[in-house]
Amino acid sequence: MATGSYNPVNAGSIPDAAPFRFGIVTSHWHTDITSALESGAREILLENGAKPENIISIQVPGSYELTAGARMLYDHEKLNAIICLGCIIKGETPHFDFISQSVANALSVLSAQLSFPFIFGVLTTLTKEQALERAGGKLGNKGADAAVAAMQMAALKQSFKKDTAIGFK
Image 1: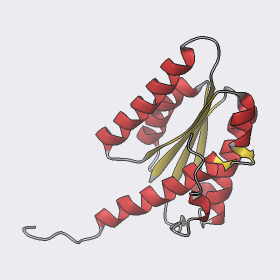
Image 2: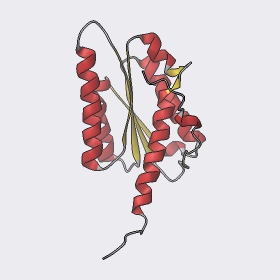
Image 3: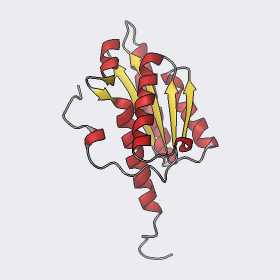
Image 4: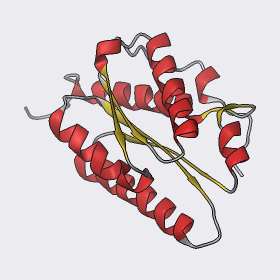
């Protein structure tokens, strides 16, 4: 279990969000948890300079639909990063494994193919209590952590756009 002492929100390396536009795609399934994740993401973006009008939010039915929603948002909005938020709680069937792996793999492929930051902010927990601990409870808010990753990746991508090429032009 990843419960180490690293806390991205307090890491001290959060870039200014003001020059960037962010998308947030949130699963409606487990809405009490995912709405807390979305609030955490939005709050940290705003605290770090993002303008409210530069945060575009949409909802999808469940975590499985995050990838399609993220791609639609990518295709229709000029954004610098998209944060994908969901919650998958293990039940008595293998459904948890299929959905968790599918979403993680699909977002990874999408990021690699498009060279664009699609941030994986999906809780995959064994119990609802564990999810609540990670959605603003004693283990912080993983939505805020995902927003920090989005700011860092947007800044990284922007750094490659500067004219620093060496060699032929």
